[in-house]
Length: 141
Image 1 (cartoon, helix red, strand yellow):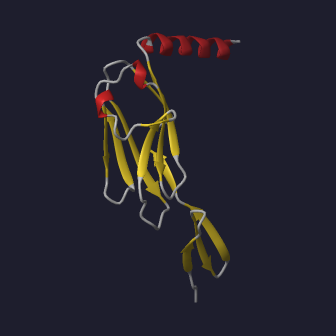
Image 2 (cartoon, rainbow, N blue to C red):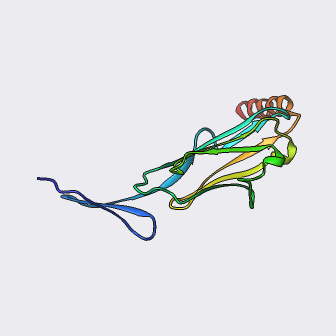
Image 3 (cartoon, helix red, strand yellow):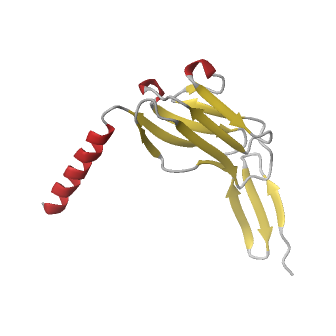
């Protein structure tokens, strides 16, 4: 008979004790999609964060751009929608500008944070073409 006992330590780790020893899980946030995003000005930035492997409800979930907490930055075009249990949150900026470039972090109260880097610049197509050319040169050489 397999007996599983679960608990959460003060460090945010979830422990499962069973027949084959102790398994440790850590609650963590994840931002869906690639860890680096490239956008052109006036496009929509949408980031979705969810908390996984958590057995407890978070007390809060904050979004940061670089070192600035942006949950209440509606004057800068930031709109954040968060579920009441703080296990799912969506950040939307309808008309992103260069000032919205940076490192975005989703930081729940009871889990490891997640981050993505956002680049917003006009020369998007030129940058892609330049990377493609450098890649071709690297392959040929």
